[in-house]
Image (cartoon, rainbow, N blue to C red; front, side, top):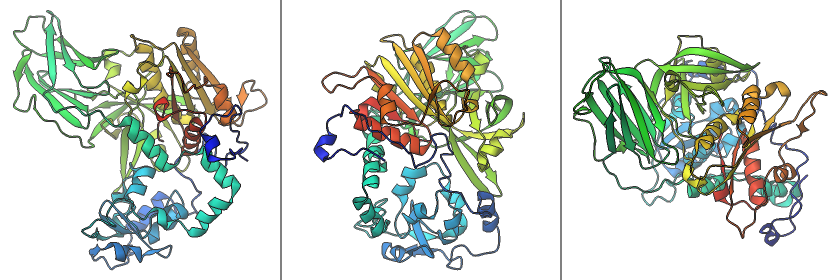
Length: 555
């Protein structure tokens, strides 16, 4: 049960008594964030792929490609006759209903409508074109005035009236709404705070410095969230740099004055948008210049960033616990790309002509030990193997020398939101810990206005589920600013630490008081399964935190 404030006006003031939740019906804080319902036998992703490869017509229209108007789409709005539109394509999802990992009711929210916005909010990373290609009906043709053409228009109205009325009359459901951040609130929260700053398109500025044995290229990026890709040709002289930021990419491409040794080293200058690329010359000498620019170097206008995948080789696997391991990946050529703090990559596999895609946040090899130049070129993915997870099981089972396709980094978080903050409070559940690794490593490197506290509250089911416990303990001993509190939801009798799940009282106990009259000196990060993240984000609002005070990484 939830303690609900008696009036809307009372919600605006912070209560001395934190909201308390005795039971979290949305699921375990460390459960599988993807599968919200248990699928019936014979309805796994593999079963769906087999059905798609059969001779059965899944379109329901005999394979014809139709032009579908909003009025026609609206007629197919029942479980037994279900069409929906995503990004201009219409699909007959009737045969897919019982295969949907989120359940039939979740899919029913979008049928009969343009569900583009709904899809983007729930799981924009899913390759729907591959999953639903055998269900393709035709192209969506909204009216010219756009009344029905806006993405997501009509999605909310697809919720059954009985569900809406019960939400209004049920105190428990109304109370839950007070503490769960809605999808609209999350969208507004991320859009308002993470909208990229507008910068005029301009040529990438850079400088070149050298000594007899080494050289440095200094890039003057526009933000601290630039992702830098470097690539060296087989002749060790063709050198290319790509800087991805603000939705654009700019490149430098040179035939170097001399040959260099791979790998190079990339250093993000703390408290700065400058990036240094350190080169080691094959033969000690003084160069007259960095090299001759190629035709595609130094473009005035960046081009729109596309999601590009690179083939990477598994060079090592490191066991973390009984169901989690770290995959160590390296590119097949002489290249690598940096991942900004709070950003992620996509991993995809192809199974019987069907693409399966999942997002992972790269981590460092260690929280304590610095990376060598060679280790910096590698990608470290912490992968938890879920029993029913097709991609996670496949990925966790990759042997050395096998190939994995990984995308370039993407994400919305910007470190400018942490200006003038002195304390960081991190709330993670399960593998929601992985984005926190980058945050911790970044925060420890900040020099100007450095952080005085970095506090991690880590939720897990049992003691054996705790990830990187030894690394966390080492960091506590090495850096006095860092602390970690473990909270278990299903501990054994030997556990002497804290027990429970996230709720208002626990959150209040692990956070400083938020005074509207004072400029906040702290910032909060949240990541975990969907229910955990939504609940924690909602509770932060109840405790008086504004959109500028926290960031929720979406699982």
